[in-house]
Structure formats: structure tokens, C-alpha cells
Image 1 (tube, rainbow, N blue to C red):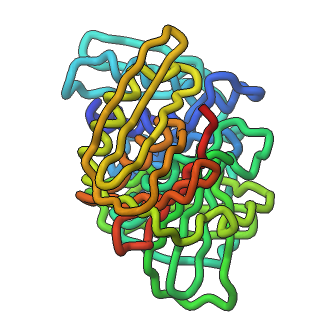
Image 2: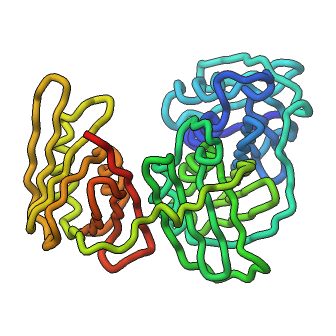
Length: 366
């Protein structure tokens, strides 16, 4: 195999591949990327056996062939070269030689035939979404996914697909994020699947605004997103997602409408003096006024008064301020609505008069 390619074309592809490759691998081959040079161009594949990223670079090939090369070392070499430099990669036996200008490198190569692949699967759901729609769907919910929770089904994102809607739901047991997007497809029955955390984060990275649409394929145990010249396949989480509808609070008269930016800025300032470990903040609601109070073990205190629209009963409730700020960070609207029942009940956050995205934050005792 022999290829010649510019650094600027290869670098972002290797960066994406290294996001998939795990630093500590049980199999040595998994720390490599597979490079296949052929008539269509250069195909680069990275996998950890759970997630697989395939990128196609439409670049002329000097000599067809395939090889597995160390992912991190190849990326570091490419990154260290001067901007706009041209690289030649040539394989010879168990070595790959990389040349660029006056730089020469020799990398240990592995047999391409040993490189594992998730491979093809039979899809039961195929749909196409605008890239912006899929990106918004994932980014507006993925922050609420659990991380290394023993309830493994929470370490991912639930996707529900029916003939008119695709819904994303994520929860870590303390908060919940849910977003709906309209679709028009023909399904025999609604489909649910849980996409693992790493797969979701890599799909978000994959979605390039330059590509107008993304193709989604859902199989029995796999989920694939193709955007432009890149395709990411992930295994699905085998588990049952909890009944999330049950935790969404009922309607209440204690409804706050506030400027999203004013509320975010006020909570951010108050959070400076919150307990660094528990991040607790107390919200005190009175007519048209929300007061955010934070304390810490050093007996320091912060208090922020924020003007809001509120005419309900006086309410005092504690929350993890990070959870509230995460929600306000993904919302796009100028105003935000908070439904609060009492100090023991969860808070429902959403855009006023728009139920396509709903966020639930559980209270905490302070």
C-alpha cells in the first residue's frame, strides 16, 4: 500500500478515530486504525468492539492495499507536522514508512486481516433526518445520561421511534431530559432502543453541519448513523429503560416564567459559594421574585434576587444548581417556564407553550 495525502485532510479523520479507540485495550489490534486504500479512496476504521467509526477520504491512491497502524502514534505524527504538509505512507512487510519533507518515521504495522469489524446488520428501521434536527435531539438530552451507573441501562439514551415522532430520553436518576422531533416514516410497530453513552457522544461529534442530512439505521442489536463520508455503528444496550412518564410532574399553579439568560446568570453567580461537592442551592419564591441562596461549609453565603413572573403561593425548595444550569445551557429560548409544586416535588422546566422538550430536576434537602 502506498498513499500520498495532505496533513489537513488526514488529521481530522485521525482525531475522530482516536476518540473511538480506547487507550487501554485487551486486544493489541484494537489500539490500531485500519487503513484500506482502494479505487474509492482511503477508508479508515477505528473500533473498540462496541463502537465502530468508518471514514472515507476521496483521495487518489498510489498503490492499493491495507494495513493496521497504531492510532495514537499516527495521529501524533500527523499533528506534529507543519501545516499544509504532504505525507506519504508506504507499507513494507511489518513496517509502515511515513515521509513528509525532511521527516521520516517507521511504525510497526499489524496484519489488516486481524482487524475486527462489527460488520453488516439487518435494519428494521431506516430513516433520514436533517443533520441539525438529529444534532439538536441528541445535544438537548444527552447531558442527562448517567456515567458508569450500576443501572447500566441509564448509561445511554433511549430513542423511541413511531410513524410521526422520534423521541430522545436520558436520565441519571436525579434529572431527566426529553425531546421530541417530528418524522414521517412507515413502521409496523413503534421501536425503542438504548444507544450507549459513548455511541451518543461520538454521533454528536460525527454530525457535520456541512452535511445536510443523516441516515439512521436501527437493527436488533445495532444502531448506525451515516453523515457525509463517515459512518458510526454502535451496539445497543440490552436492557429495559424505566417508565420515565411516571416521573414527569403534574400540572401546577406554581408556575414561574423567567428570562432564561437572567436566570442562568443569577444561578451561576449564586453557585460560586455553593458546596463544591453537593452543589446545593435554595430557591425561595414569592410574588414576582425568585431568590437563590447558596451556603458552603466555610459559612460563606451568596444571595441573588431575580425578577420573574409568579403569582402562586410562597415556595422554598433546594436543588443541585449544576442540574438547573445544564438545562438552561441547552435551551434555546429567551424565556423559560418552571413548574414547582412544593419542597418535596420535582421541578419541570420547559419553554413556555412548547412541550417538545421537557426537563425534570429532582429536589434535594439542604
